[in-house]
Amino acid sequence: MGAITLDKVTKAFGTMAVIPGVDLEIADGEFVVFVGPSGCGKSTLLRLIAGLEDVTSGAIRIDGSDATRVAPARRRLAMVFQSYALYPHMSVYNNIAFPLKMAGQDKATIRRKVEGAARILNLTDYLERRPGQLSGGQRQRVAIGRAIVREPAAFLFDEPLSNLDAALRVNMRLEISELHQSLKTTMIYVTHDQVEAMTMADKIVVLNAGRIEQVGSPLELYNRPANVFVAGFIGSPK
Ligand code: ADP
Ligand code: MG
Image 1 (cartoon, protein in one colour):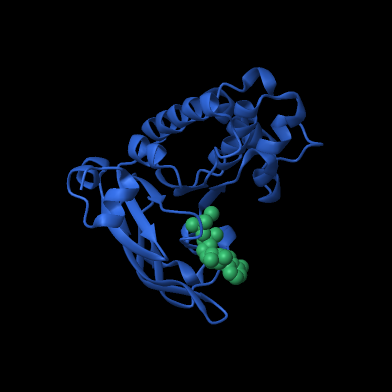
Image 2 (image 1 turned 120 degrees about the vertical axis):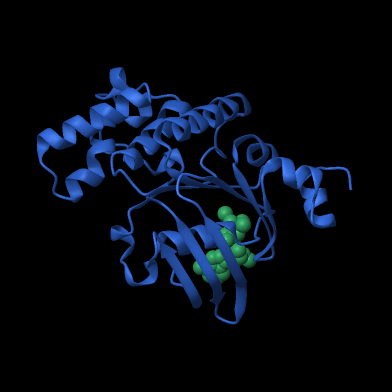
């Protein structure tokens, strides 16, 4: 399960209202992309959902229950950080196993889950290496592996490909889309890249200054942009 509802969510830092108010419904299994210019509040919104920031007002529900009463570690949401968040001194195996060890799972279960994730991500032959001995794409897969083993209700990605080169980005986009096809788990993917949004999303949420300008499928946004901002950002002729 991984249905997420935002109900009149606001966030202020001091006197600055970064998120003046957001209502949003994400269905279980959906691939949702938050897109918008730098500084529009994409990361803040994702961090609110992850519980890494507290909402100023409003409610976030995950599968119907009030997430703001649940500690981040217990929300069963896995945030995928950029690949440089790996532990350089640990093997790939131990990097992926880390959240399971922290949760006190037994060795056999950890091995089964890590090997399962490694198979999905084509990392089976790299488990004994250190992150420094991997390519950028492989490192990003390890970061995703660390999320997969937690068997989350939803994956949260914050611009995970922004430090990869263009060709690799295209590849990883496809891999993440394929991962969504096979796991069918809810994914929220933050990017400022329109192409990424248009090619990956079931549903795009266009943000501007902490507000939602439009929610729709890539085709809906392209064919029927709600306003000039969306048209300009998505690149459709309006
Ligand atoms: P995006 O991810 O879309 O680039 P962010 O969510 O990171 O945007 O930031 C939205 C706005 O909130 C920016 O103006 C940023 O400076 C501000 N902001 C983000 N985090 C903090 C913080 N911890 N304290 C103060 N301001 C913040
Ligand atoms: Mg950001």
